[in-house]
Image (cartoon, rainbow, N blue to C red; front, side):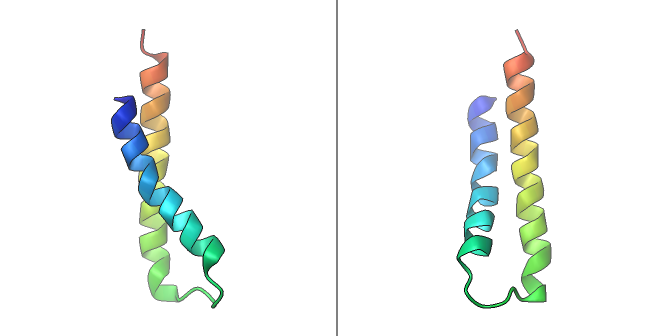
Length: 55
């Protein structure tokens, strides 16, 4: 379960790198994709938290 959570974190990490590295202003068409990837990363964090709480 933790491994699947880590896999879900990867799109969010890539989105954050894309936002931080972009030297041009962010195009409005990319915002829904970035929000979706950050939501997937949040789901990964929640999955890792649930796996760590489980005995």
